[in-house]
Image (cartoon, rainbow, N blue to C red; front, side, top):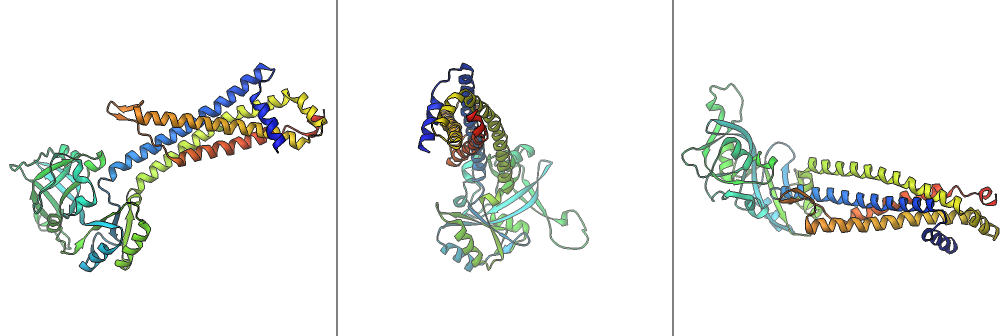
Amino acid sequence: MHFSLYIAKRYLFSRSSNNAINIMTLIAALGIIITSAALYIVLSGFSGLKDYSLEFSSFVDPDLKIVPQQGKSFLVSNDNLLAINKIKGVTSYSKIIEESVIVEFDGKRQIVTLKGVDDNYNQVTQIDTMIFYGKWFSKGSNQVVTGLGISNNLSIGIFDYAKAISISVPKPGKGQISSVKSAFNTISTNNSGIFDINEELNNEYIFSSLETAKHLLNYKDNQVSSLEIKLDKGTDETLIKEAILTVFNNTVDVKDRSQLNDALYKMLNTENIAVYLIFTLVIIIALFNVIGALIMMILDKKASVTTLFNLGTTAKDIRKIFFLQGSLMTVLGGFIGLILGVVIVFLQQQFSLIMITPSLPYPVAMKLFNFLIVLATIIILGVLASKLASRRITKNFVNS
């Protein structure tokens, strides 16, 4: 093994007398370097996009969310709340009432999601930090905070007491409707602030106090749509989920942030896998150059190979020499490419070389997983390519 490795390194770093083979070897090595660097950069770009996309959801999504297994709401007792408070790792919780409503202002209507929250909500999420105009609604008031998209669609300003915002929701029940007015619960309110997170959330949510939502929907005092929970950093979410399920006797579901954004996670992961497979195909194509270079090297070194065989080296050992030469070329080229990719990603993070908009650099993220997956891909494919090329060495070939 040491002998084969020694000869393989000599062959790899020594120049051939045939200039065409030197050029082919250089092209093969550059192909590996460039493709491995490109794969790492692209994966880092997708990791950056994933972090960037999920960063906005963290402003409104809690660490954990307790939702009913059936229906839109469930009852929560003081004993339940006390038990949740005692769970180690739980920092805070907020009671939530959430329902689709009709918002009307100045003759314009839009169906949105009303989210009634209690006074602890801003300790669970950071939604109040995303208000760019106005302020969060006052405690004990029936004011609301709207998304930028809703504000633009309905031309809603802030503290416009001359024109009230009308929020309506169908009344529950059965039987015929005697009039349109009697079919809806309606409240009048004013807007105190406008938040700006992303286009989807800006067009979907209106926030109010828990009491306002409770009054509109005729909820009981202990009836909620969900409980949102903030955890200490580094806390084991699995253990806390199990503790919460025990508190509610397994009558609720507990969702973490990834489950709350299931569709987004699936979309980003699918795109990431698709890009990885495409660039892996590019690497496979580049490795054909390695196979060609090795075969040309084998033919060029035929006299040396014959000499080694006559000196007692077996065909298996000679085959191993060229196998190790190809493996070393791919591993070394892949590692150099990865270092180059890391440098480019680092420069993008520090100096914003590529911009999406004049104020927004293209997001990238350096992650160990991406580094390892690229290195593993290069090693596995490189070993297979070298194995394929070295099979050209047979006893008849070296003895002819």
